Length: 521
Image (tube, rainbow, N blue to C red; front, side, top):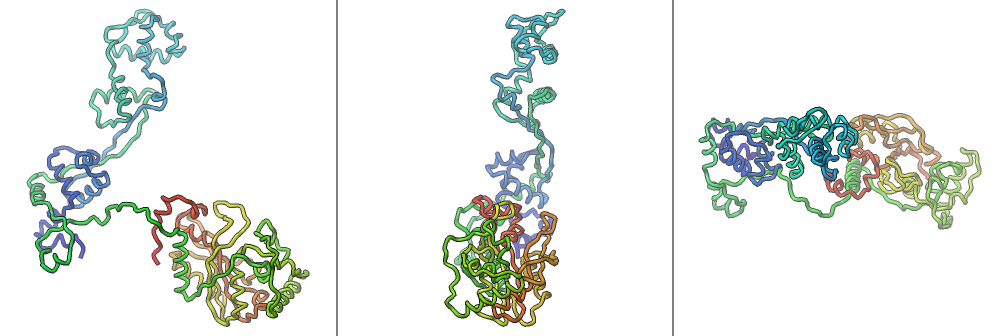
């Protein structure tokens, strides 16, 4: 039973209908009502915050609660916030054109043609004529022919000058807070170029909705509620029956604790591992460094393939290659070399298989497992780092994670592979999925999966998939079909975290890192 239902227990129908029960008031609501009780006119949320010593966020939350209980009225109104423009603030000493005119005349120049040529106006006749118009309005000058003379009122500041002084002192003012004289000055200055900057804002004002203040007094007349925690003694003694406990704001923000936590990407990796284990897959691991034999040759990638070039692969300086001591390895190497010779119609060079590389994909680990275990039926996966000698962009990294899985049995087929992939995506919350044919050197048939990104409003390529070619499985001693799928894990993570740049996953932006909730497994 929630607190709102508890509040309604044992109350009259009128109380239940209006929600005007003392036990239904939060301390924030009581504080707001105690201020509104003595306000006959509207009051803004900023004014409420200032009078109550509550934060603006607390005021807005309390106002929404009181509105739901029909205790207050809320009205939205437009206001204008204005300040002096940058050109005015950057000026050494800003004066209005009419004051320039007065200063020029006081300096001894009173004939209009000479005033135009003065350093104050620099030939700008439009500015001078505007200055004359405002000076006459302020009763500062008298004009006879082309000569201008000053009147006594020139010693007084104009209303516009007074408002500018207020802006220099306050930085920014609200139109709604101005008196009638300042509002007229604002309207005048608003028409002049490059003096004010304006910003339209929408504000809320609040007022009690009860006509009879006695209703509010009834709500507030009971004493403060006892702020106590529930304890074993209170429960055993039955004291809780006579205590009105403070309500708890379960949506109130908590203080930020700068405690350590996992990177969101690692959390997501753990989540995907849980999903795959739940689908019956077992996890395997392998070395980051692999001989070219396992990284390329065993995967039926020809030795003249462009992926084996230095531009695409990180080669290690070590000259240690394959160990040919074991008879079984010798047989495997001979089988693989024979397949390359027959299918690619080229000579296979043993020395090309020796150099060690930073693995460009996780599949060498899978192949070594198949060769060593020779399973007749198995479901395996691994999520680990791979390395590519590529240019770093918004969608490419030099070092990233790859997720890969295989399923092998005598009855394995392409329909099962599509079903496995569809189930995997659905467990991640992705329901729009489609597949289309493609080409990979070591699978046939091969397919590519696509998922629909709601945020980007387009289809995104994700994992490659297919059935290992017999040219790959036969040398390993595997006779039954092997379904395989995999791809870059970071691309999947970009969809999960709504990112458009893959580099953000490895940034040191603490604000983003701490804002990502832990994945719920």
